[in-house]
Image (cartoon, rainbow, N blue to C red):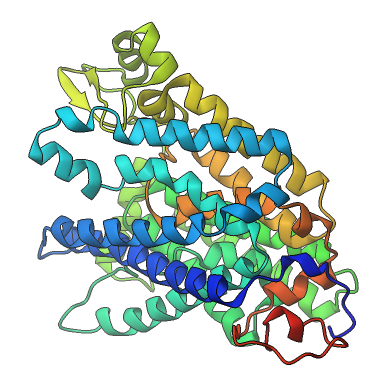
Length: 443
């Protein structure tokens, strides 16, 4: 990669880069741990971990927002004027939505507002798109996702054994299916971890009867297979046969599990959970004996609410109850931020999707565009905005697709920003013949 010609203006000053990435790594890990802590309430001990999750959530989002705002100058250069204006309006409206009615709330409501990931913090997540304005962010993101997957596999080896015997990965394998899209840039060991973690993520989604999580991971695995087949132009027979065999085996396993009452090599406990998932798949949970969530939502919302929403802790009435969320991401956006929020969000997402798929010269940006498409589809059955890693990844992907410099790079040029390895922020030696050295990157 020594002869790669990359535009020099993306080099960042040493102090900003060092502080930004330290804050990003700290914030993303804290956000992940706040999500992992919620698993404890689903164990047989039923530990109420919300009081552990809430401070981790607040600290993680605070660090992530600071690291993103440090990068605000880059966004002016990387976004076109229309996208930048809409992004500013989106951030302003998200702030209004998050803080709306804050002074009139009780102490308990304020605690829930900042301690639950579906409330105030969820509407600050779009600001994290600013991080993707720096190409160095790509490797920081993939490295962090990979390290979380390593920790998840390590914990699996511990919690499955007696006396714990917990069937969970603490959500640490959440990014494995997305990492598969960037297969060609992963080291051999990381590829095995990402592949194993993807199948385990689907398994845990089935055991927890989380239909939207299963859909999300299966979609990303299919997207990764598509990218692999397209990118490998001179694909060797064994590699192509391996990719096809994995997909055929996966389809066959799903088909067998759907027809069988039990799978012989699995325990009765796991077979029971798989059967519960199979029974839940065709069930429409949006309709009940006394309530139709969608119709009740439309009846309860006034015209002004449909335009501006009811704020981050807004609710609607259904079946005699006040619900803070609805099982449709698009309606959830309207409930909290109104049609104004939905328009701004869709403008940024759809333009990112178009630019990523049709206006980019490399498959890294196209891969992030597929992540954007996946979340937009997931918002139909659920996909509610939330302060958790997968929703943050959606906005990271939107930022990557809007980044003009990343879209202009070829696969060879962008490879030095994506290939897994360490990043050295020390002042580089003055070697004009080595542009990679002058970019604070080491392999």
